Amino acid sequence: MKKRYLAALVTMGVMGMGSVSTAGAASFWATGVNEQAGWWDVNKKWEGSPPTQKQGFFPQPRQDGDHVLSWAATAANILSYTNWSPTAGRTINDTHNYGGENGRYMSYFRDNFRDTTGSMKDGWSWWFSGQTGWLSQTAAPVTRDGGGFYSDAQFNGSWSPWERQVGAYHGSGRYYNQFGYFLGGNVLGDLRTYLGDSGWGVGLGIEGEISCLGPGGQQYSKRIGHAVTVWGFEEEGSNYSIWITDSNDQELALVKYAIDDHGNFLDGIYAGAHIAELQALASNGGVSPNAVPIPGAVWLLGTGLVGLVGMRRRKGEQE
Image 1 (cartoon, rainbow, N blue to C red):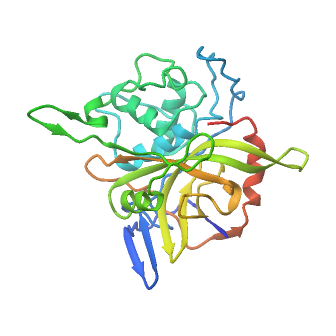
Image 2: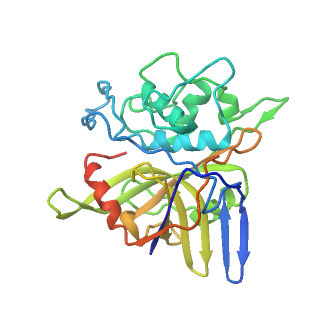
Image 3: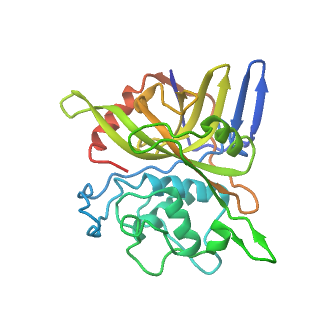
């Protein structure tokens, strides 16, 4: 059963949970974050036209919306949380009125990139070094003077005979191939490692077949690629859950989903999909939990049908 925690603009103390164990159960939360407070959640506006299908390796024309920028939204949440703010002397603005610091970062991605596929790693690499790596034909920025607030060495790390610099980026590699075949890896172990008061911001790539609701109310299956921000992981015996914020749901909400030991979603709108990859960013001298925490318990219990309404908008999304 999915649980949803809704945000309201009130002020209260922020208390981080880190790793918490009770009899038969354990919880792992990002530093300074719990169910009530600390998490970041920027949402798409679904503006502009849905992107056209990319043909071969030719660049797409400029797409000015945000339909497939879930990777940018997740990257923006984590940049805000891990405290990698723009360097001194450079100012970015919330040109699209997303709201909040992560909204400024989301606007900056949108102003500099096409509305097309990418990953958190691509966004962070560009933020640090001004480069996007090998995905130059898809996630290539359309401007020449954006990003580059830090350096590639700070992001990817570097090595010389005199010095070893550990980079801020860590990734799990692929758990699943493009056909949904499990390649290996420790999904649960990685969640425990990168959450649990470790100072990392964590994004997840989600792929697979899910059930969607069409405009006429009919259900159909669709293969998706999507990105979300994960803030907490819970386990009790052989039952596992993650807490995520999702740029698609158009709510300031922390949502709980059940998963299995290979990262397959068992409930809610992502039932049938799986965690394809984990991408994490280390903090820059400490984390910055969201200064707009969440009020007393306001729970919505359901089976994900509320989210199916939003899936109508996402019919063209393949991220």
